[in-house]
Image 1 (tube, rainbow, N blue to C red):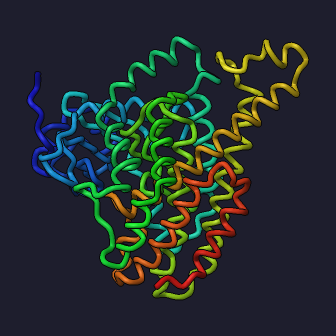
Image 2 (cartoon, rainbow, N blue to C red):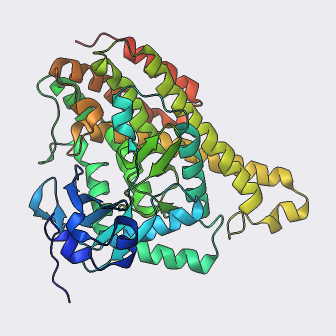
Length: 420
């Protein structure tokens, strides 16, 4: 087997300079390549390669968690699952993921198109940008990839083959199972939070029996309900945007899990962005931005629900809720009843996943820039405390919540609270 070697700016042209797909996109004169290492994530190396003809992105997995170091090993095979997920996402919602130009499984390298002038969605929201397309684009993406990757749509053998393939992404599932569902709720070694400002509410949450039981119910669901192929880490840092275009990146956590997980993780990040806006008001009031973010949440869910319903009626060709039981017998009402029950289940579970995502991003290992870039610790803690309260409400009371308007109204009341 070829020995794994991490890329750097000097070795990258030597290693990839003979790859035709890259030369066609960047240019054949490797001496003219300009290489920048831009990876700011938790796991991987990421380079931008500029040449005489154009640019590409080179992403390489490392055999450990970059955020922590070699003391936390990770298998290189995660890049294989990312590659396979990108292929399937491109098939299921064309144009919503980057084009793959080259994949080297042994060296865990994916070369893909360079998205420009796109920026990370999280950064755009921190800057106060109101992007007109993201609600519709992300609602369609989640509905199409989740529906078309499930037994509602796929041919049974193909779906089970995919389930077997992605079931080997064990180590990244283990990260989610611990960092999202368990670690925030006890004194795990790698946890961190804004201290001492949040110490009181953190003690309350970790003593909250109802919350911990619900978090474990959600973990049970995550670990056992292999409904569809998930992105697995869908948040505003996994989306690149311009005002005209939305692209989804980084599905290395892809696996078969509950349909509601991707949607819940995504919406949680918009609610966190909402609560973080008070920390980014140096250039003026962000009231309009807060309204925009709540509208985006509504838009994503409404688009997801409508597109999922459309696919239910037009592409439901799998083994679940077969047409032979409903439409073919003239029972369209039965099909609609089944659809309503499926959507209600997704809604309820989605709220729970959103709640624990908000907790883990504030109390666990991997925080997000929405809060982390707020330099004033007291102000940051006030923003975070409001998100923690909403997260608790969503996780514990998800079966009693009936509309986005209800949640957004609560978010508005929490935003106006004076937190000591």
